[in-house]
Image 1 (cartoon, rainbow, N blue to C red):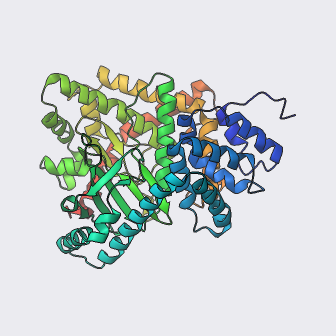
Image 2: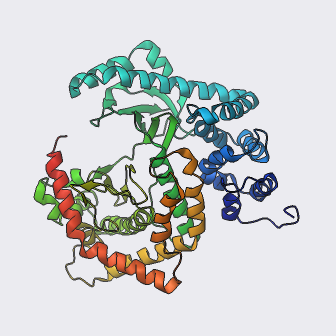
Image 3: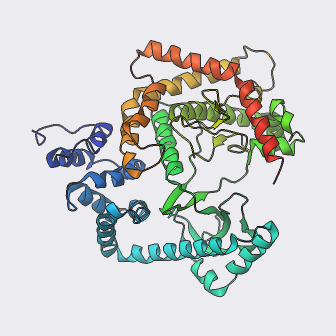
Length: 476
Protein backbone atom coordinates (compact mmCIF):
# COMPACT_ATOMS: atom_id res chain seq x y z
CA UNK A 1 0.00 0.00 0.00
CA UNK A 2 2.79 2.46 0.95
CA UNK A 3 4.48 2.05 -2.45
CA UNK A 4 1.35 3.37 -4.21
CA UNK A 5 0.82 6.17 -1.70
CA UNK A 6 1.76 9.65 -3.01
CA UNK A 7 4.50 11.41 -0.98
CA UNK A 8 3.38 13.13 2.21
CA UNK A 9 4.38 16.66 3.25
CA UNK A 10 7.55 16.84 5.38
CA UNK A 11 5.68 17.39 8.67
CA UNK A 12 3.52 14.27 8.12
CA UNK A 13 6.53 12.18 7.08
CA UNK A 14 8.43 13.19 10.23
CA UNK A 15 5.50 12.05 12.35
CA UNK A 16 5.81 8.53 10.84
CA UNK A 17 9.41 8.30 12.09
CA UNK A 18 8.37 8.72 15.72
CA UNK A 19 8.55 5.86 18.25
CA UNK A 20 4.85 5.08 17.72
CA UNK A 21 5.51 3.67 14.21
CA UNK A 22 7.74 0.59 14.37
CA UNK A 23 6.61 -1.01 11.08
CA UNK A 24 9.56 -1.12 8.66
CA UNK A 25 7.40 -0.46 5.58
CA UNK A 26 5.86 2.65 7.16
CA UNK A 27 9.28 4.01 8.18
CA UNK A 28 10.72 3.31 4.71
CA UNK A 29 7.79 5.17 3.16
CA UNK A 30 8.43 8.15 5.48
CA UNK A 31 12.07 8.28 4.35
CA UNK A 32 11.01 8.16 0.68
CA UNK A 33 8.85 11.23 1.35
CA UNK A 34 11.99 13.07 2.55
CA UNK A 35 14.26 12.10 -0.36
CA UNK A 36 13.77 15.34 -2.30
CA UNK A 37 13.83 17.89 0.53
CA UNK A 38 16.48 20.60 0.23
CA UNK A 39 19.64 20.59 2.34
CA UNK A 40 18.34 23.71 4.11
CA UNK A 41 15.14 21.94 5.20
CA UNK A 42 17.05 18.78 6.14
CA UNK A 43 19.37 20.87 8.35
CA UNK A 44 16.33 22.28 10.17
CA UNK A 45 15.05 18.81 11.13
CA UNK A 46 18.37 16.93 11.50
CA UNK A 47 18.18 16.98 15.31
CA UNK A 48 14.90 15.00 15.25
CA UNK A 49 16.04 12.63 12.49
CA UNK A 50 19.04 11.61 14.58
CA UNK A 51 16.65 10.84 17.47
CA UNK A 52 14.49 8.81 15.05
CA UNK A 53 17.47 6.47 14.51
CA UNK A 54 16.84 5.18 18.06
CA UNK A 55 13.47 3.75 16.99
CA UNK A 56 14.78 1.75 14.01
CA UNK A 57 14.66 -2.03 14.44
CA UNK A 58 17.92 -2.59 12.57
CA UNK A 59 21.18 -0.70 12.17
CA UNK A 60 21.03 -0.83 8.38
CA UNK A 61 17.81 0.87 7.34
CA UNK A 62 16.54 3.46 4.87
CA UNK A 63 16.91 6.32 7.37
CA UNK A 64 20.60 5.57 8.03
CA UNK A 65 21.25 5.27 4.29
CA UNK A 66 19.41 8.54 3.60
CA UNK A 67 21.30 10.50 6.28
CA UNK A 68 24.70 9.10 5.27
CA UNK A 69 24.12 9.84 1.57
CA UNK A 70 23.11 13.43 2.29
CA UNK A 71 25.98 13.89 4.77
CA UNK A 72 28.53 12.61 2.27
CA UNK A 73 27.28 14.95 -0.46
CA UNK A 74 27.08 18.05 1.78
CA UNK A 75 29.85 18.44 4.35
CA UNK A 76 27.83 20.93 6.41
CA UNK A 77 25.14 18.30 6.96
CA UNK A 78 27.91 15.79 7.67
CA UNK A 79 29.37 18.16 10.26
CA UNK A 80 26.14 18.48 12.27
CA UNK A 81 25.25 14.79 11.84
CA UNK A 82 28.66 13.95 13.32
CA UNK A 83 28.19 16.17 16.38
CA UNK A 84 24.56 15.15 17.02
CA UNK A 85 25.68 11.50 17.05
CA UNK A 86 28.93 12.16 18.92
CA UNK A 87 27.19 14.07 21.72
CA UNK A 88 25.18 10.95 22.69
CA UNK A 89 28.01 8.41 22.59
CA UNK A 90 27.93 8.25 26.42
CA UNK A 91 24.39 6.77 26.27
CA UNK A 92 24.86 2.99 26.54
CA UNK A 93 21.66 2.10 24.66
CA UNK A 94 22.76 3.88 21.47
CA UNK A 95 26.56 3.98 21.66
CA UNK A 96 27.11 0.91 19.44
CA UNK A 97 24.58 2.01 16.81
CA UNK A 98 25.75 5.65 16.73
CA UNK A 99 29.41 4.57 16.82
CA UNK A 100 28.97 2.41 13.71
CA UNK A 101 27.17 5.23 11.85
CA UNK A 102 29.98 7.63 12.82
CA UNK A 103 32.56 5.13 11.57
CA UNK A 104 30.71 4.73 8.26
CA UNK A 105 30.62 8.52 7.80
CA UNK A 106 34.29 9.04 8.69
CA UNK A 107 35.42 6.19 6.40
CA UNK A 108 33.44 7.74 3.56
CA UNK A 109 34.81 11.25 4.14
CA UNK A 110 38.39 10.91 5.37
CA UNK A 111 39.31 14.50 4.53
CA UNK A 112 36.48 15.76 6.73
CA UNK A 113 37.48 13.27 9.43
CA UNK A 114 40.80 15.10 9.84
CA UNK A 115 38.95 18.42 10.31
CA UNK A 116 36.65 16.80 12.88
CA UNK A 117 39.64 15.35 14.76
CA UNK A 118 41.05 18.89 15.03
CA UNK A 119 37.76 20.11 16.47
CA UNK A 120 37.72 17.27 19.01
CA UNK A 121 41.28 18.16 20.01
CA UNK A 122 40.24 21.81 20.50
CA UNK A 123 37.28 20.80 22.67
CA UNK A 124 39.39 18.40 24.76
CA UNK A 125 41.94 21.15 25.39
CA UNK A 126 39.21 23.61 26.44
CA UNK A 127 37.63 21.02 28.74
CA UNK A 128 40.96 20.30 30.46
CA UNK A 129 41.64 24.03 30.85
CA UNK A 130 38.18 24.63 32.31
CA UNK A 131 38.59 21.82 34.86
CA UNK A 132 42.02 23.07 35.94
CA UNK A 133 40.94 26.65 36.56
CA UNK A 134 37.68 25.88 38.43
CA UNK A 135 39.31 25.81 41.89
CA UNK A 136 40.61 29.35 41.29
CA UNK A 137 37.72 31.43 42.61
CA UNK A 138 39.41 34.84 42.30
CA UNK A 139 38.27 36.36 38.99
CA UNK A 140 41.60 37.97 38.04
CA UNK A 141 43.68 34.95 39.06
CA UNK A 142 41.42 32.68 36.99
CA UNK A 143 41.74 34.97 33.98
CA UNK A 144 45.54 35.11 34.34
CA UNK A 145 45.71 31.30 34.62
CA UNK A 146 43.48 30.88 31.54
CA UNK A 147 45.63 33.20 29.43
CA UNK A 148 48.80 31.41 30.57
CA UNK A 149 47.29 28.07 29.57
CA UNK A 150 46.19 29.41 26.19
CA UNK A 151 49.72 30.66 25.42
CA UNK A 152 51.27 27.24 26.04
CA UNK A 153 52.81 26.09 22.69
CA UNK A 154 50.88 22.77 22.67
CA UNK A 155 47.61 24.60 23.36
CA UNK A 156 48.33 27.22 20.68
CA UNK A 157 48.80 24.40 18.17
CA UNK A 158 45.53 22.68 19.20
CA UNK A 159 43.58 25.93 18.90
CA UNK A 160 44.98 27.08 15.53
CA UNK A 161 43.49 26.71 12.05
CA UNK A 162 40.40 24.80 13.20
CA UNK A 163 36.87 24.86 11.81
CA UNK A 164 34.36 26.17 14.34
CA UNK A 165 32.20 23.28 15.63
CA UNK A 166 29.39 25.85 15.90
CA UNK A 167 29.57 26.94 12.26
CA UNK A 168 31.89 24.98 9.92
CA UNK A 169 32.03 27.80 7.37
CA UNK A 170 34.11 29.75 9.94
CA UNK A 171 37.75 28.80 10.45
CA UNK A 172 39.50 29.88 13.65
CA UNK A 173 43.01 30.97 12.64
CA UNK A 174 44.50 31.41 16.12
CA UNK A 175 43.46 32.14 19.68
CA UNK A 176 43.40 35.74 20.93
CA UNK A 177 44.45 34.91 24.49
CA UNK A 178 44.36 38.53 25.69
CA UNK A 179 40.62 38.75 24.90
CA UNK A 180 39.65 35.45 26.56
CA UNK A 181 38.22 35.31 30.08
CA UNK A 182 36.44 33.13 32.63
CA UNK A 183 32.75 33.88 33.05
CA UNK A 184 31.03 34.25 36.42
CA UNK A 185 28.49 31.43 36.52
CA UNK A 186 28.88 28.26 38.60
CA UNK A 187 30.47 26.05 35.92
CA UNK A 188 32.97 28.78 34.96
CA UNK A 189 32.27 28.91 31.20
CA UNK A 190 35.11 30.18 29.00
CA UNK A 191 34.67 33.29 26.85
CA UNK A 192 36.87 32.44 23.86
CA UNK A 193 37.97 34.76 21.04
CA UNK A 194 39.63 33.53 17.84
CA UNK A 195 41.14 35.44 14.95
CA UNK A 196 39.13 34.72 11.81
CA UNK A 197 40.98 32.90 9.03
CA UNK A 198 39.07 35.16 6.62
CA UNK A 199 41.20 38.31 6.36
CA UNK A 200 38.08 40.50 6.14
CA UNK A 201 36.02 38.58 8.70
CA UNK A 202 35.38 39.68 12.28
CA UNK A 203 36.90 37.81 15.21
CA UNK A 204 35.00 34.66 16.19
CA UNK A 205 33.51 34.75 19.72
CA UNK A 206 32.42 31.50 21.36
CA UNK A 207 31.34 30.50 24.89
CA UNK A 208 32.63 27.05 25.92
CA UNK A 209 30.50 25.29 28.56
CA UNK A 210 31.51 22.24 30.56
CA UNK A 211 29.02 20.89 33.11
CA UNK A 212 25.81 22.35 31.63
CA UNK A 213 23.40 20.33 29.50
CA UNK A 214 22.88 22.40 26.35
CA UNK A 215 20.47 20.00 24.63
CA UNK A 216 17.39 21.89 25.81
CA UNK A 217 18.84 25.22 24.65
CA UNK A 218 19.69 23.59 21.32
CA UNK A 219 16.12 22.27 20.92
CA UNK A 220 14.52 25.61 21.86
CA UNK A 221 16.76 27.56 19.46
CA UNK A 222 15.99 25.04 16.71
CA UNK A 223 12.26 25.55 17.31
CA UNK A 224 12.70 29.34 17.15
CA UNK A 225 14.57 28.84 13.85
CA UNK A 226 11.67 26.75 12.51
CA UNK A 227 9.09 29.31 13.70
CA UNK A 228 11.09 32.03 11.94
CA UNK A 229 10.96 30.01 8.71
CA UNK A 230 7.18 29.42 9.05
CA UNK A 231 6.62 33.15 9.57
CA UNK A 232 8.84 34.15 6.65
CA UNK A 233 7.03 31.70 4.37
CA UNK A 234 3.91 33.79 5.04
CA UNK A 235 5.71 37.11 4.50
CA UNK A 236 6.30 37.93 8.18
CA UNK A 237 9.91 38.76 9.09
CA UNK A 238 10.13 39.12 12.87
CA UNK A 239 13.91 39.73 12.99
CA UNK A 240 14.51 36.65 15.14
CA UNK A 241 18.00 35.82 16.40
CA UNK A 242 18.33 32.06 17.00
CA UNK A 243 22.07 32.19 17.75
CA UNK A 244 24.24 29.10 17.39
CA UNK A 245 24.34 26.45 20.12
CA UNK A 246 25.64 22.89 19.93
CA UNK A 247 26.05 20.03 22.38
CA UNK A 248 29.28 18.17 21.57
CA UNK A 249 29.51 15.67 24.45
CA UNK A 250 27.84 14.79 27.74
CA UNK A 251 27.22 18.21 29.37
CA UNK A 252 29.74 19.90 27.08
CA UNK A 253 29.03 22.35 24.28
CA UNK A 254 29.44 25.71 22.62
CA UNK A 255 27.29 28.84 22.35
CA UNK A 256 27.66 31.65 19.82
CA UNK A 257 28.29 35.10 21.31
CA UNK A 258 25.98 37.77 19.88
CA UNK A 259 28.10 40.91 19.58
CA UNK A 260 26.99 44.51 20.24
CA UNK A 261 24.22 43.38 22.57
CA UNK A 262 23.47 43.95 26.25
CA UNK A 263 21.17 42.39 28.82
CA UNK A 264 18.25 44.47 30.08
CA UNK A 265 19.96 44.41 33.51
CA UNK A 266 23.17 45.91 32.11
CA UNK A 267 21.23 48.54 30.17
CA UNK A 268 19.54 49.62 33.41
CA UNK A 269 22.94 49.69 35.10
CA UNK A 270 24.50 51.72 32.27
CA UNK A 271 21.71 54.30 32.43
CA UNK A 272 22.31 54.74 36.16
CA UNK A 273 19.15 52.94 37.20
CA UNK A 274 20.49 49.62 38.43
CA UNK A 275 18.67 49.12 41.72
CA UNK A 276 15.60 47.38 43.03
CA UNK A 277 13.41 50.19 41.68
CA UNK A 278 15.09 50.36 38.25
CA UNK A 279 12.80 47.59 37.01
CA UNK A 280 9.82 49.96 37.41
CA UNK A 281 11.30 52.84 35.37
CA UNK A 282 10.47 52.86 31.70
CA UNK A 283 12.89 55.31 30.09
CA UNK A 284 16.22 53.46 30.26
CA UNK A 285 15.77 51.15 27.26
CA UNK A 286 14.68 53.88 24.84
CA UNK A 287 17.45 56.17 26.12
CA UNK A 288 20.01 53.40 25.52
CA UNK A 289 18.79 52.87 21.94
CA UNK A 290 19.03 56.63 21.33
CA UNK A 291 22.69 56.54 22.40
CA UNK A 292 23.52 54.15 19.55
CA UNK A 293 21.01 55.46 16.99
CA UNK A 294 21.44 59.22 16.98
CA UNK A 295 19.67 60.13 13.74
CA UNK A 296 15.89 60.01 13.42
CA UNK A 297 16.13 57.48 10.58
CA UNK A 298 18.39 55.07 12.48
CA UNK A 299 16.33 55.40 15.68
CA UNK A 300 13.08 54.65 13.82
CA UNK A 301 14.77 51.64 12.23
CA UNK A 302 15.98 50.42 15.67
CA UNK A 303 12.47 50.81 17.14
CA UNK A 304 11.05 48.86 14.19
CA UNK A 305 13.61 46.06 14.78
CA UNK A 306 12.71 46.07 18.48
CA UNK A 307 8.97 45.99 17.81
CA UNK A 308 9.04 43.06 15.38
CA UNK A 309 11.57 41.01 17.36
CA UNK A 310 9.68 41.65 20.60
CA UNK A 311 6.49 40.38 18.91
CA UNK A 312 8.30 37.25 17.68
CA UNK A 313 9.78 36.40 21.07
CA UNK A 314 6.52 37.15 22.93
CA UNK A 315 4.74 34.56 20.78
CA UNK A 316 7.60 32.03 20.66
CA UNK A 317 8.22 32.07 24.43
CA UNK A 318 4.47 31.84 25.12
CA UNK A 319 3.93 28.84 22.82
CA UNK A 320 7.06 27.02 24.06
CA UNK A 321 6.40 27.86 27.71
CA UNK A 322 9.87 29.36 28.22
CA UNK A 323 10.26 30.07 31.93
CA UNK A 324 12.72 31.80 34.28
CA UNK A 325 12.60 35.08 32.33
CA UNK A 326 14.45 37.92 34.03
CA UNK A 327 16.50 40.99 33.12
CA UNK A 328 19.71 38.96 32.68
CA UNK A 329 18.40 36.59 30.02
CA UNK A 330 16.67 39.06 27.73
CA UNK A 331 19.07 41.02 25.54
CA UNK A 332 18.90 43.87 23.03
CA UNK A 333 21.32 44.60 20.21
CA UNK A 334 22.39 48.16 19.52
CA UNK A 335 20.42 47.90 16.27
CA UNK A 336 17.24 47.36 18.32
CA UNK A 337 16.83 43.61 17.90
CA UNK A 338 15.53 41.96 21.10
CA UNK A 339 16.25 38.29 21.82
CA UNK A 340 16.09 35.78 24.67
CA UNK A 341 18.93 33.57 25.95
CA UNK A 342 19.26 30.67 28.42
CA UNK A 343 16.43 28.19 27.91
CA UNK A 344 16.88 26.02 31.00
CA UNK A 345 13.12 25.80 31.65
CA UNK A 346 10.53 25.19 28.91
CA UNK A 347 7.05 23.70 28.44
CA UNK A 348 5.69 25.59 31.42
CA UNK A 349 8.14 24.30 34.02
CA UNK A 350 7.95 27.59 35.92
CA UNK A 351 10.10 28.13 38.99
CA UNK A 352 8.50 28.50 42.40
CA UNK A 353 9.51 30.35 45.53
CA UNK A 354 7.92 29.61 48.91
CA UNK A 355 5.29 27.53 47.09
CA UNK A 356 4.26 30.35 44.73
CA UNK A 357 4.91 30.48 41.01
CA UNK A 358 7.41 33.29 40.45
CA UNK A 359 6.26 34.05 36.92
CA UNK A 360 2.60 34.92 36.64
CA UNK A 361 2.35 36.25 33.09
CA UNK A 362 2.02 34.34 29.80
CA UNK A 363 5.02 36.21 28.33
CA UNK A 364 7.25 39.21 29.04
CA UNK A 365 5.81 42.53 27.88
CA UNK A 366 6.96 45.17 30.35
CA UNK A 367 6.13 48.88 30.47
CA UNK A 368 9.63 49.80 29.21
CA UNK A 369 9.16 47.51 26.16
CA UNK A 370 5.84 49.23 25.43
CA UNK A 371 7.54 52.63 25.89
CA UNK A 372 10.02 51.75 23.09
CA UNK A 373 7.29 50.33 20.81
CA UNK A 374 5.27 53.56 21.28
CA UNK A 375 8.39 55.65 20.51
CA UNK A 376 8.11 57.27 23.93
CA UNK A 377 4.48 58.35 23.49
CA UNK A 378 2.31 58.09 26.59
CA UNK A 379 -1.08 57.65 24.95
CA UNK A 380 -2.44 54.16 25.49
CA UNK A 381 -3.98 53.62 22.05
CA UNK A 382 -0.86 54.53 20.03
CA UNK A 383 -0.98 53.24 16.45
CA UNK A 384 2.47 51.65 16.87
CA UNK A 385 1.20 49.49 19.72
CA UNK A 386 -1.90 48.43 17.78
CA UNK A 387 0.37 47.30 14.92
CA UNK A 388 2.52 45.40 17.45
CA UNK A 389 -0.52 43.58 18.86
CA UNK A 390 -1.78 42.67 15.36
CA UNK A 391 1.69 41.31 14.52
CA UNK A 392 1.64 39.12 17.65
CA UNK A 393 -1.80 37.80 16.72
CA UNK A 394 -0.74 37.06 13.14
CA UNK A 395 2.42 35.26 14.35
CA UNK A 396 0.43 33.15 16.81
CA UNK A 397 -2.17 32.10 14.24
CA UNK A 398 0.56 31.07 11.77
CA UNK A 399 2.17 28.81 14.40
CA UNK A 400 -1.20 27.37 15.32
CA UNK A 401 -1.80 26.35 11.69
CA UNK A 402 1.46 24.37 11.94
CA UNK A 403 0.65 22.98 15.39
CA UNK A 404 0.94 19.34 14.27
CA UNK A 405 4.51 19.94 13.05
CA UNK A 406 5.53 21.60 16.33
CA UNK A 407 4.01 18.73 18.35
CA UNK A 408 5.68 16.10 16.14
CA UNK A 409 9.11 17.69 16.51
CA UNK A 410 8.82 17.75 20.30
CA UNK A 411 7.42 14.20 20.39
CA UNK A 412 10.47 12.99 18.45
CA UNK A 413 12.74 14.47 21.16
CA UNK A 414 11.18 12.56 24.09
CA UNK A 415 13.85 9.85 23.63
CA UNK A 416 16.64 12.32 24.50
CA UNK A 417 15.88 12.01 28.21
CA UNK A 418 15.53 15.74 28.80
CA UNK A 419 14.02 16.19 32.30
CA UNK A 420 11.39 18.66 31.04
CA UNK A 421 10.47 16.59 27.96
CA UNK A 422 10.17 13.04 29.23
CA UNK A 423 6.64 11.89 28.31
CA UNK A 424 3.52 12.59 26.26
CA UNK A 425 2.24 14.57 29.25
CA UNK A 426 4.84 17.30 28.57
CA UNK A 427 3.37 17.75 25.08
CA UNK A 428 0.04 18.77 26.60
CA UNK A 429 1.52 22.18 27.39
CA UNK A 430 1.95 22.81 23.64
CA UNK A 431 -1.58 21.58 22.93
CA UNK A 432 -2.88 24.03 25.53
CA UNK A 433 -0.92 27.08 24.34
CA UNK A 434 -1.78 26.43 20.68
CA UNK A 435 -5.43 25.70 21.63
CA UNK A 436 -5.67 23.11 18.86
CA UNK A 437 -9.12 22.00 20.06
CA UNK A 438 -10.71 25.42 19.35
CA UNK A 439 -11.91 27.14 16.17
CA UNK A 440 -9.70 29.84 14.59
CA UNK A 441 -12.00 32.53 15.97
CA UNK A 442 -11.96 31.11 19.50
CA UNK A 443 -8.19 30.58 19.35
CA UNK A 444 -7.65 34.23 18.40
CA UNK A 445 -9.92 35.35 21.25
CA UNK A 446 -7.94 33.10 23.61
CA UNK A 447 -4.62 34.63 22.52
CA UNK A 448 -6.02 38.15 22.88
CA UNK A 449 -6.98 37.35 26.47
CA UNK A 450 -3.42 36.13 27.13
CA UNK A 451 -2.01 39.28 25.52
CA UNK A 452 -4.19 41.47 27.76
CA UNK A 453 -3.14 39.40 30.78
CA UNK A 454 0.56 39.91 29.97
CA UNK A 455 0.04 43.65 29.55
CA UNK A 456 -2.13 44.17 32.64
CA UNK A 457 0.19 42.13 34.85
CA UNK A 458 3.46 43.56 33.54
CA UNK A 459 3.98 45.12 36.99
CA UNK A 460 4.38 41.57 38.34
CA UNK A 461 7.24 41.00 35.89
CA UNK A 462 8.79 44.29 37.04
CA UNK A 463 8.42 43.12 40.65
CA UNK A 464 10.20 39.84 39.83
CA UNK A 465 12.96 41.76 38.06
CA UNK A 466 13.34 44.08 41.06
CA UNK A 467 13.73 41.00 43.25
CA UNK A 468 16.30 39.62 40.77
CA UNK A 469 18.23 42.92 40.79
CA UNK A 470 18.29 42.89 44.59
CA UNK A 471 19.47 39.28 44.76
CA UNK A 472 22.15 39.92 42.16
CA UNK A 473 23.06 43.22 43.82
CA UNK A 474 25.29 44.15 40.92
CA UNK A 475 27.78 41.34 41.51
CA UNK A 476 29.40 41.85 38.12
